[in-house]
Length: 388
Image (cartoon, rainbow, N blue to C red; front, side, top):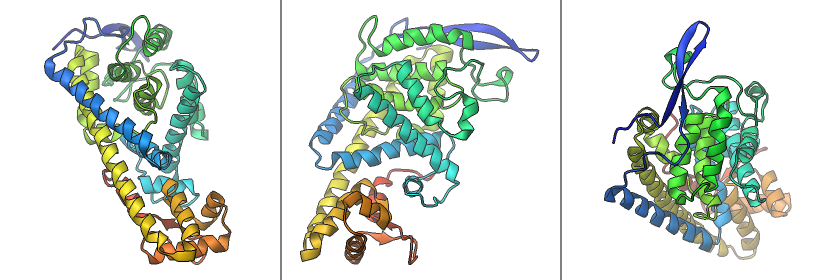
């Protein structure tokens, strides 16, 4: 359905050039969404898939370990959408102070995306509602590096930004001017908290993502924060206990369509096409997460049974195995810290696990060795396309 743009344009001028900035209308959309039976089924299917994922998270014996890796999958894919080249293995190497296979800054950027999500979760669990205060804290975590200082981390922008092109006059899209942001963000914040009326959580997450991207409240990092907002909103509304969803994999796989649909909402008010795509993405992402978690559980159980056959060496080797589910690429020093075992015991246990084919040494060095729980890493990365 083609409507008029869901907002208004403001005539602007900069450097002698005129352009139009778009100021979105407050949510929910007006006129209301046209809910076809097919679109309703899409959302029903997505909610069923989310329910399966949430139930699995509640009963997984190693849910916290899987969560650690799934959060990193989302950060890797969301950052790849923005152009970084870091893979999951690169991020895991960076996190143990090893040289990744990409420029360090790419891996560091993904690590900051993880930090932003973790900051948001801690804020939610500390009682802070979904709000610009929470999102500003996440933005500060995302840009907490020397190169981010000029991008006012944690602060709403005070100048014009644009998307695509070299200047506002030839941009693909120009978000609201800085002096219109307060009027956009106040109703946006109320919408996140079901004011003036409640919105079903999954629909709310879909609408809020577009609105945040359209408002573009920060100088940098809006894309990554907008995608993290999806998962956070689902956690805040109780749809998910833990952020085990990684929708950025779907968005990256269909990146051109993702951007096209965001723009079609802004230009023509085509909310229905976006909602159909979003619900499909959530269903696919939740189903992928369930399949990956089950595959990891099966692998871990099989390997645990094999380790149990080591006799006297089993207990310490099982402790290493447990630690490497959380950090599947690790150094002996990191494993000493994680397990409380002595360095000698850790090295002996790693030798046992290497003989069983459960871990593999990556560096061929005598000192500063790095070990990977290789099949675990391979399973985690099985769906991830190479960075392009």
